[in-house]
Amino acid sequence: MASVVRSLYARVDRRLPRGVPDVVLQIVLFEVGYMMYRVVRGWVDQPDGAAVAFQNGRNIIDLERSLHFFIEPRVQSFFGATSFVGDAASWVYLNAQVTITLGALAYIYLRHNRSFYFVRNMFMVSWTIALIGYIVYPSAPPRFFPEWGFVDSVANFTGVQPTSAGVNSLFNPYAAVPSMHVAFALMIGVPLALLVRHRATRWFWTLYPAFVTFVIVITGNHFLTDAVLGAITAGAAWAAATQMARAREQWAFEGAQPAPRGLEAEPVRVTA
Image (tube, rainbow, N blue to C red; front, top):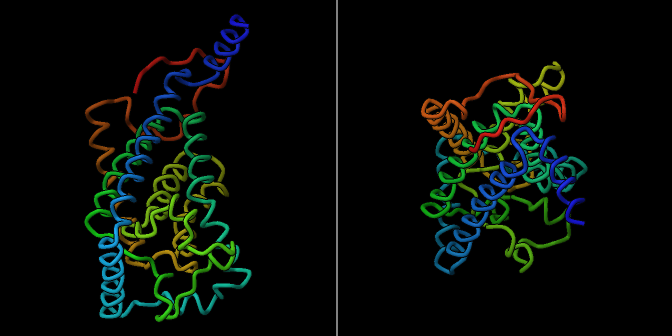
C-alpha cells in the first residue's frame, strides 16, 4: 500500500510544474487569507459595526448623488433585477468569485507557471488592502437600502434572505469597500488577456472585468464607488507585485510562456 501511495505521489509530483510541496504552499497561503477575512468578518458583525456600516453606505449614496453618478437604481430597473438578466447576473455573482477565479488561478499555475507567482502576490497584496478597508470603512451594500429603489437580486434568485444565519456565517455582509469582485476580475482578466494566445479568449478576459462590474451593480451588491475602489486596489496590487518582482526574479510576470507539460520536462524545484 505504501509503495502504491509513493508511486502515485511521484507521478503527480512530476506532472506539476514545481511539485506537490509548492501546490500545498500556495493553498496554505490562500487559506490564510481566507481565515483573516473570517476574523475581520467577526469584528464587523458586532452591533456597533453594523450601525457604522449602514451609515457608511448612506455616505456613499450621498457622495454619488453629489457627483451626479448615482445611477445604480436606474440600471437595476432598466435591466430588471428579478428578470432573466437579473437571475443570470445573480448566478454569475454567486459563482464567479470562487469558481472562475480559482479555475483561472489553477490554469495560470499549470500552463503559465512562471507568471503565477506575480499574480499570487497581487492577490496577497489586494487581500491585505481589502481587509484594512473592511476594518476602517465597513459599508452596507446597495441591496440593504430598498428605500432608494434597490432590489436584492441574489436573494430573489436563491430564495435565501441575506439576514439568514447560514449566509452570515459564510460571508461578510458589510465587506463592500473595496469591491473584490472587481479587483479579482482585473487580477485574473488582465494577466490572462496578456497570456492567452487565441484572439477570442483574449477578448473574453479583456471584457471580463467590465462584465463583473455590471453584475455587481445589477444584483445590488456594490455601488460604482466600490467598483472604482476595487479597480484601484487591483492597480495598487499590480504595482506592489512589480516591486516585489524586482527583489526576486522568480516573482516576475513573464508573459505568454506556457509551463512544461506533464512528463515532457523535469519540474523546476523552486520554493516561492
